[in-house]
Image 1 (cartoon, one colour):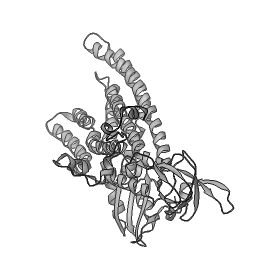
Image 2: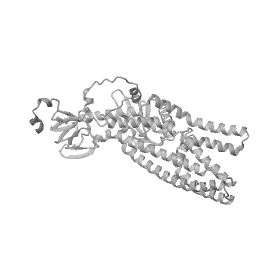
Image 3: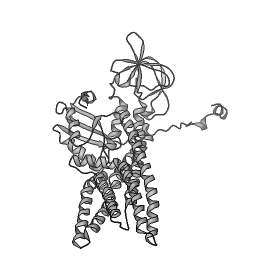
Image 4: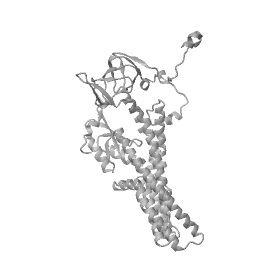
Length: 463
């Protein structure tokens, strides 16, 4: 990261407020979000830090000259998080790679769980009838041979996250999961070694299978939500045909367009930057910007906005706003603000989730100590502590409310509704009166004749 000049990714306004978006790997739960935001806010000069769990993106604000962007990356690195400048393409590539890893791990865990369960059912049935100790031990060792490599491979998403957290002297929700799975396997090996009646390899592998299934579904949901929320950015052309001083045309990234440069927008293309028409005339679709679904005629001197679809004739447009400063970019920032903000219920869930992992560890420890004091013995006490860790998977507590909020924001955007506050949905549920202050936001793509009764029937049929 040191080789990357982060200053190119910093945006600032006329008031001296600076902002950068970083893509951060390893964000899985509310504990991660809290830890990242706390670390960044502790950097001198930082005024705010917000994590978008869906995009794995961290937005950081500071006053101009108060913070070196590299110090933000260093603060995250000390916490065990790898950060880089945010781009939609890199997030999607990382998401695809993570999804492949999860599906491979899920397949391994599912295959192992089915085979171990067959052996376990045989042992259970045999314990109730006449299975010999030698046969039972053989089945347990076969289960161990299947479970150990399966857990080592399928558990990597949880083990790696937990190890990173512990190295940074913090906990996350993967820590109790990892401890529970490893304890279950360890206890099962001990039970097998002493020829006990029961082993719990099936429980450990099945737990991993269901956890991986849940994480895969969560990843799929967030991928879908990113697609919905990312549609706005996709509507703005990624490239533009830049008109050179000698009149030649060169295709360049939209981000390379500077104010004052002229671009050619052909029919069927989207305008890549806010600007003024300097040559040509056409009809354009500005429904993304104005909400009006009927095409608008534009000619020389008229203003067009990034994301506008050119319908009929070629246009030469002189850019008036830099990339990232267009009207559609401002709308995107409003949507991002809504998905990154914390509503009251999300804040409550975050606070509960931050306390959850330490609470689970403490409960398991107290359970083990309590049963030891009661005379249950070390063996039984460890089994009970392991059971406490296994049955208290905290994923739903951390992810349910944020997932619903982000999914709802994406679905509303797809229907043309933008949320500009994190608690908008909660406040809307309490509303009893709605006042609309702009009729343009209420138009639909269903025009009809308002005075059909005044038009002769023959003329109306021709129309």
